[in-house]
Image (cartoon, rainbow over all chains, first blue to last red; front, side, top):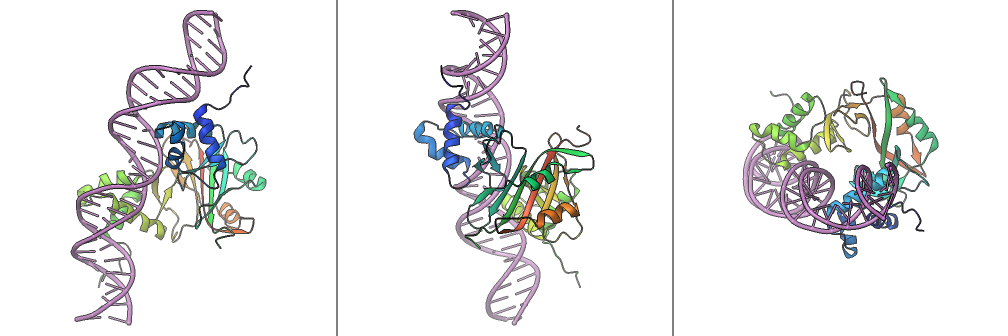
Length: 129
Length: 129
DNA sequence: ATTATATATGTTATATTATAACACTTTGTT
DNA sequence: AACAAAGTGTTATAATATAACATATATAAT
């Protein structure tokens, strides 16, 4: 009786690599890292990434075209994301601030109610400043 | 005595097109639109875009790799940007909300003071919902 | 258990977005 | 005029992402 497997083989491989990484990873650098494991084509990476994003396991840092693991426990669906990004080193930190999240989640404009937001802060991290 | 020209020829051409557009424009669609004006290469577009961004004349919508004109008068440097984006049509609206802007500009985390942020809200616009 | 359905895989090819590098020109300053 | 800074034009190429198709595997329904 096998435990219900949430992630497929490729999805798990990609997630493992992103979770182990110190910083955000780019799709092709993931690809180069898994070629020994029999994954050869960008499609296989992008499909896994898409699924992992949908599951809330990872997030895309839009300004960097790179991917980070979600550090919020049970962030099943990521409709409210905020990151702090160092402009000097590659450091990206997910911000989990309840007040900020509530404030933005309830924000609406001209009758348009938002389903989702992504916020990216830029500056210099402690090390770099 | 010619008026001090702020923008170069290519920069002005690119800005004009972005300002006239109803929605966000992609770099290569700008390129195709200016080939009649003697601009032939992506570099020429990207260089103009980079400069216009630095001047705060346009903004990049990171989630779309597309560019919109800044609608805030005298938005000389854009270090605090927020957009509402329709997930259905291509509509993008720049949000200028003083409270939101102040709240986010003064936001800091773990001693890291931010220089700049970009916020993208997603939902359905009035027409699409 | 077998069929049906959805999800995942492997693969080749190609589209889209962006930058490198180099030669030259124009504009602004001293 | 001499120099520096910013902009242009060009060719080539890098980096990011998707299309399309054939096959395989897992899940659910009868």
